[in-house]
Image (cartoon, rainbow, N blue to C red; front, side):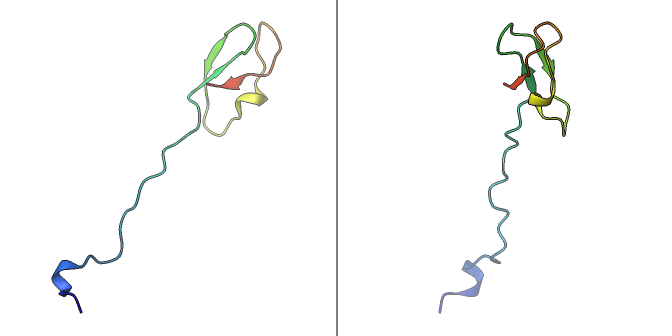
Length: 57
């Protein structure tokens, strides 16, 4: 059995998952950009110029 002092506690922090949510919503047609609000899907926002749903950048 290995020495107890060389073993970890078994409770690693692991890799923190990066937040993959886009921070900017952009219009695929004209390039209009707006900051993404937390909890709001970019596709639910329409471009004020083209009336096209925005996409996450």
